[in-house]
Length: 126
Image 1 (spheres, helix red, strand yellow):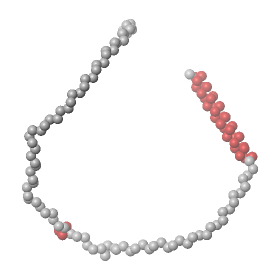
Image 2 (cartoon, rainbow, N blue to C red; image 1 turned 45 degrees about the vertical axis):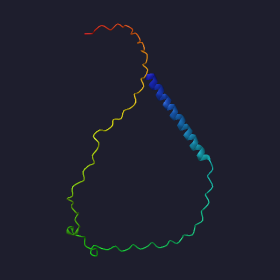
Image 3 (cartoon, helix red, strand yellow; image 1 turned 90 degrees about the vertical axis):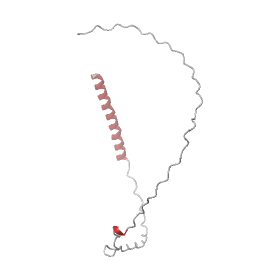
Image 4 (tube, rainbow, N blue to C red; image 1 turned 135 degrees about the horizontal axis):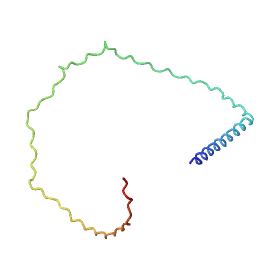
């Protein structure tokens, strides 16, 4: 087990070393490449004139709002004292729906059981 841990650590160290070598070589290559030419300048574009934003309308203040209606001025709902209509009568004998009989499924043959191998149990321990 200790050998596996040592091998794993050595493999991990090797992988990290190889990846850092590749990174170092890539950095050296980028440092040795001559500089890129400067980017061309973008000419300045004329600034469009923006129309003025519309003014915010004046909303009425609390002093100019009409008063809210009082509870007593609400209309009342009409009350009905008429009896509810009775439910319609249904026939007392309802025909029973019967389904056709289902076909019988064929029975599966019995599969023989695998014989058990006798084993010796260990002696009881105290």
